[in-house]
Image (cartoon, rainbow, N blue to C red; front, top):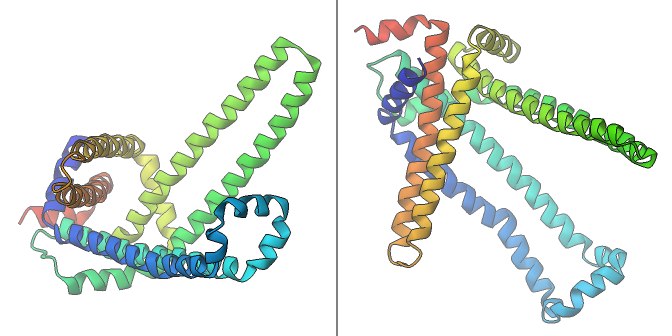
Length: 304
């Protein structure tokens, strides 16, 4: 089922290559917005701090000697830069979720209906339908991740305090158990966070596939993962695969450093292929979900 889902994922992605171009367009928009929200304030700051930058060797000692004076002197610029960064994060997150809603909606329609043909109208329709629900789902899931992170911090602090007390006692056996406890907490936390991320991905897929609310989508994703525990392995395989491919692409980019004329072309090709692989991953996950839930329209669509 894993190999079949990946194969059909490639086929689904190939039928919707326009989504790759849309992802590239989103990336370009993000770069433009990055320059507007962060580049311009930085340029303004450089212009304002021109006399200080001319004496850059004295700027760092001044910051070290008089940090409060430095902050008070340039508080307005720091505030503007901070606000610009927040606006940039909000804009890019919104754009990402909007594009993701359209992408998943298009892939779903294409997977369940073999006669479906991509169009910009259908993409924006799906994006408008899925965006608000994806936003609520991601907000809830991010809140859960923050809680897990805080629990991890608290646990780490508690273990650090215990380790310090054990170290003072000087017992080798106690030192071993304390070190083992720290390692266990770290490994367990990594596993929990990774499982939470995978659960979030399948929750987004369930939300788009089923067209239900946030809590119902979470319950359906939970039920799907209980019924198909291999879904965790499937995602790990996809994750390892994309890491391996990205290593190869990075090696190719590095190998063309000596040929400056080819560098822009290689960069564009690798950027296209990276975005293509992301569409393949989402396509494969959707196909796997359809197969695992016996989605009724899936069979009707492919038996035409």
